[in-house]
Image (cartoon, rainbow, N blue to C red; front, top):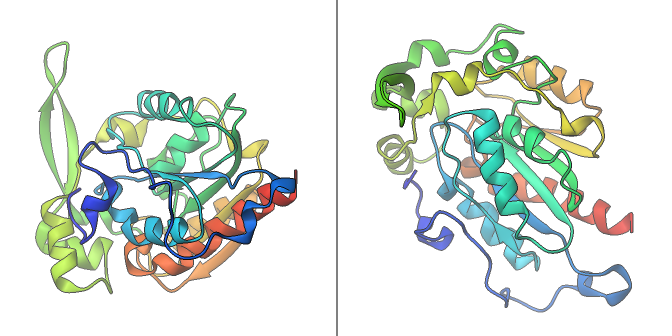
Length: 274
């Protein structure tokens, strides 16, 4: 979604890549004995787009990382993961794969069989096991108010007919998705939000990369989309390295520093393991 200031830094094509020269001095992490820094691939979730990572991108680039933030079509887990996999296949060297919200379902699928992916980071995200969907995980624990805040609309299917997609009502967007984000920013986010197909939230996982990869999880304690209790349960099940942040669902916008710090910890662990 074209919502936060600095979205242009992510590129109009939908894929944001860092410039070869990061601001500030070259990080010590470029020592040859450990090889290059991992590339960080940031995957957004529903009701948003890659611009939601702007503050995180700035910090990761400053730390010397190459960053890629591809668009997610939000039409289905398997199809969205297939596109993400095509992006991953263009990246040389180790990857730290990060997913926010529905993006967690996508990275859990796309990372299976992708040898360059060395770690997963979930940011207030779904971590589905085989047979689970985003909606089934949301319903695991009470507390989500997303259903009352969304509106349904139709979109055309390529083969004919139409299907249902969801958006968050603009008048409820800030309190539902981005409480604590500056009002003007939240309003822009609401206007530019990306709808998600209902079928994508209902689609059940067929694979689960987190079972074989080291993973990290950021719990947003004020989340009204995915209940924090559900987040804690998913993080514990995945045996994730976990942090909790007093933040809304849009934590990458409200607290990009905390998100960046967790990603950098994952990246450091990847390099240390070599």
